[in-house]
Image 1 (spheres, rainbow, N blue to C red):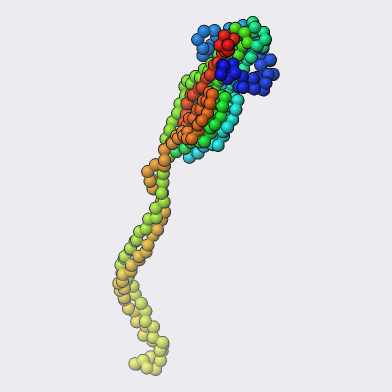
Image 2 (tube, one colour):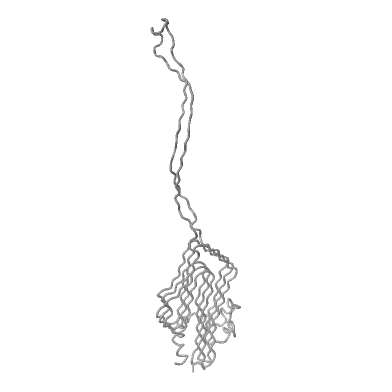
Length: 327
């Protein structure tokens, strides 16, 4: 099969979908003078030079993502990113982004250009550029779980496919595609991605674990006492005839002294609940998993799976086909 025939199903199908974007950028120098300067251009002509070529067809995707001065504190947080049973049996250009957490940057960009094959001097220029900046961010994870899973995805497809799955904080992922097909002698394609991360501070810690304990106790107390005093014993027969001498009005009340001695005792049981340290909870866990994916795929496939903090991943594809290659 000729190269041009292999490219046509993908290029022309996507060109129809992206026709408006390609025409809008067909001026050649639309966005090329903006964010694309100085950000990881490929060897040879840079993106600006490519777009300045007098092209029969031109397409450009230039984007920038910035993340600055953010603070994230996760305690006992669970972040799950999952792309399962997705994009199977797909055709053409497919891009999927799945993220869980905070401050993640993901992007899929495609630039397609085709020149009229009847125009022998026609040329096609396609350029894709992305800039992702991650500066001075702070993350504190305490007993945090980050799980990123790509399972049974992107199987039995054809064309170009890009899948990004991330879980955590401030991850950067990027898929770029640039395709240029010309019926003439000039076809240039460029894909560029620039990712920078500076001043990122990450603290991963486990959280102190506690358990509840019931404490029991007993108590006992004992004592003794001693008392002294006087008492009066009264005679109810006041002034009776029974008094010797026959007197009247006599008082036979008697005085007495006493002493008392004794002992006493107290006993009981006490209970109370207290929190005691019991080691550490599970510390920060980062799991990235890719299973049973991208099987029986034909064409260009890129998959990024990350878990954690500040990961940077990129997939880029650049294709250019001129008339000599298509003969």
